[in-house]
Every structure is written in structure tokens, then in C-alpha cells.
Image (cartoon, rainbow, N blue to C red; front, side):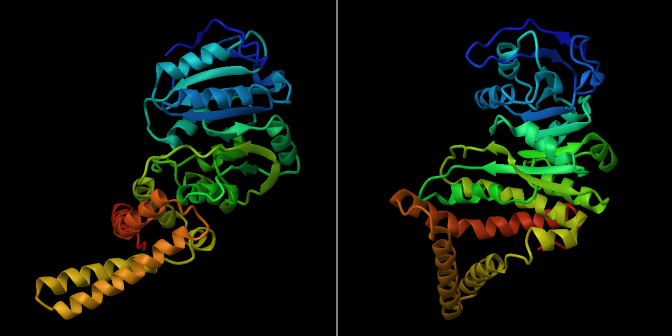
Length: 360
């Protein structure tokens, strides 16, 4: 696909300046008016996106208002749709001078890992800064991240701020785990050299889950140092979610199995020290109750169901501790607490089978 320069349009209220260039995910050349690496280009911002044009625009407006001089960075949007509305956002934000703003339609792979790979492969800067389309980077984000790299680190884990309700919902509290995670692609800087050595992101991680930890472990395994810089900050608002979101999220456990297969010691040391035995016990008691009922062992079935009830209520109480007690939220917790353990066990066992690993 040929790179096409698009007509720039000013955005007065943000004073953004960019050059818009379109490139293919196969890596076709960028247009001549995009700044070459020799012109002082220091960092390439890569933003994967998938049909969230409104969120992407909010993110881009923040990225284009950085305190880092405009000629020092470029922005690559890797569109996993691809979606014409995303391209329209870039057209609105493009302006004649400043950081190059490039659009990469991703068609040869799917998922955020693949989109990020297509993005950083287009980068011409020696450092790649990754963030997500639903974040709002602080104005000093790029300057702070680059400063942290100057000490010899190959990567930097930036800070993540996630405002949540008081009290939060169970979903909000789970999402806020990003703020304490060691290394997340919502905010990290990696040298291009290190990315090339480790091969970028493993595209088998087809959901936004554990691909960042996989990159982290790969960098550490090769002796690279990862610095932390909380001043390289992005705000990550919690996206609204429909009731029952916790059930849909259980599918992510499939990729825990892949991460465990690749890095078993690191997974147990940094992610989950032991399997969720309470889930297995809840499922076992339910299966025992069903089996006993089918064979007419009603006393055993009653005891197994009593155990299942106690364990499920204990699990539900743990999710409600410190979270909202609004009636709708409590009802959701009761219903989903009964379904999460069997769903989680299913996806854990399916992941173990799919990736041929002894994962529980």
C-alpha cells in the first residue's frame, strides 16, 4: 500500500501540529515530509486502537500537547479495525508542522499485540513509547520517560493513575490493578534495539492480557534493566462496562496459561504464586453434588451443596468487601460469584490444553 500524505487541518483549541501519513501494516515507506530519524527524532509513540475513535481522539489530543519539542517525536496509530472513523480523527488533528502523525491499518494480524508490533515496526526513532487509546498522557509524559532511559535502562515502566468511585465497584477495583502493576503497555518505553532483540510482542496473546508481562519477562531474561518513573504519567479512566463484565473477562485466563508455559518461574513469582484452589474446590463441590443427586445419594448431595453455598458466599463477600453495596451491585456479585469459578476453571484447563502446559 502506498503512503499517502493527507491534507492537514488545524485544531485551534489544542494548538496541535502534526503531519499525517498513511502506511500499510506490511511496512511500506512513509512519505517524504515525515521527519527523518536524523532530524532529532527521539521517540515514537505507538497507540493501538480498535473501533474507539472518540477515546482515541482524547488520547491523541493529549499526546500532541507534550512538553517535548514537536520535532523530537512521532505518533503511529495502529488500527486493528481498520476503521474509517479512526482515520477521520487523524485527519482532524493533523496540522502542518510538529510531530509526524501516521496511520497504520492492521490487517495481517489481530489483537493488541499484533497491532503494537505493526506500530513499532514503522517507528524510526530509537525509543518506542506505548500507550492505549483510552489513556490521557500527562503533558510531561514523554520528557519524563526519556529522562528515565538516560540512566542506561532499556525500558521504563511509567505511572498509571486510574480514578475510581468511592466506594468502587468490583469491576473498577479490579481494573485499578493497573496502577500497581510492574509493567503495562498502557504506559511503557522500550528501546527499539531491545524490541528487535526480543522480537517484540508475542502475537499469540490475542487479547489485551499478559502480553505486557511477556515482554517484561523477555527483557529481564536477556539482562535488560527496566526502570520505574512515576512522573511519566498517564491517566487511565475506567471504561463503562455492562453488568456481568466479570464473566466475559474470565476468557483472559486462557493467556495466563500461555504466559505460564513461557515463563513458569516468573509467573509464580510475579503474577500468581499458587493456583486459585478455592475455585477448584467450589467446582468440585458442585460436581459432587450433581453426581450424588444423579445416583440418589441425597445426603451427600445436600452436604456438597451446603459446602458449595458456603464457599460461594465467602467468595462473594470477599468481592463486596471495600466495594459498593448498592443493591444492583450486590445482586450482580451474588449472581456472578456463582458463575465465575466454573468459567475460570474451564478457561484455565482449556488454556493448559491449547498451549500444552501443566497449568492450574
